Image (cartoon, rainbow over all chains, first blue to last red; front, side, top):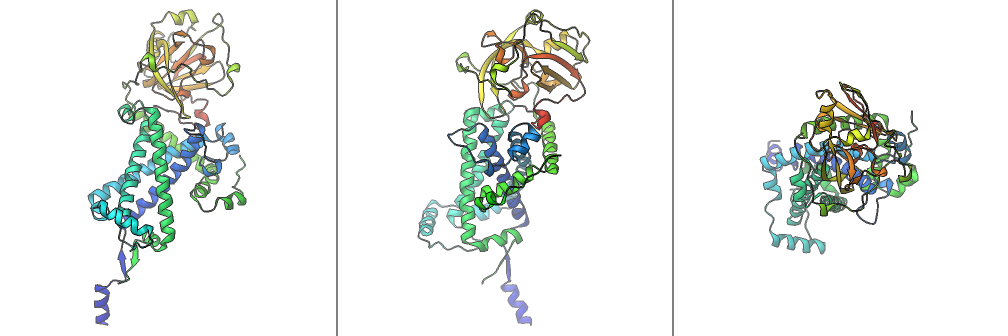
Length: 223
Length: 238
């Protein structure tokens, strides 16, 4: 009995992987970003930058026939409403996440340091299917990916602000090279986030045991 | 009130559990719900307030050189170009109403007598495109002072010859770059761009720049707008 308690203390059954703040903001950020991407695609379709549009069913903003009833057009208004509503969710959730990450030392502990040599080594190992994936430990490639996507999200937010307010935030807009260039930056930022999401979801499918800890916070201690 | 349709099973299956399908699941179905619409409209109303706080009334829109002006300016309205109202200077009248002391209507030649200035600014459309143009006319502020409008009122509303209407808050009406435009590209304002008078507001999105303005009112009662009443953000400041 006493031995068992001792053992439990030395080798707890569960380890805490993600703090509540990280978990909650992860899912809120995810929701906000997915809504902003879906509605952003509909907004893009109204005035495409390139020779393609997103199929309506992939976008967010209401069905065209119903939108006709609400908005007298095929769904730009609905998409804009979603985009500028989810903006607040993203703003709140991202701010909490970033402040927490910086203040608590979460970023320092989990995302740093990233050594270029380690990134190359891990990448090669991953391509050969030999990269060890331990729950709760991030390899150099992952660290690079997370730092990259956080930076891209910030860039996309800033370019978005400079499109939304090219008069009030005109310094920011000109930093991006003007209104028209900022639209392209915003688009490519979105594209990079979508690419990240694809890889992120694919890896979660390949290593499903990483999913439950992002919900419960805990992972079984295998030691 | 409206028929709310769910995405049919086939499209749903076809999409698979991709990001797109996720967007659709949360999307079409959800957007078209009346309670969701209510939340979205309330968020838009909240955005009006935030933009009101955020907008510095003395902040000027960037201006450009003559060489930056787009030679071919884009036409945009809810009807084709050839259906644009054709107003006659001889019979045109700008009607005034609301919190204005001198409500006598204005003729075109009287408007042309007002002090004129010009600006080269960027017209940004809610759809995403933008064009740089040159407009000339009288700052709305000067006109509002001339007609002895109550400058402490909340809104200035505009009614157009094509049935369009919109409104702005007083700080924007008094903004130095908000003008009653009578010229475009140094020519008399063309019919398709709102002859004889449009309100040019470079600190607002394009649809807040009414053309063919035939009536102006100063009021404390929210006048709304054509697209605004269909769910487009009312403030829509740039």
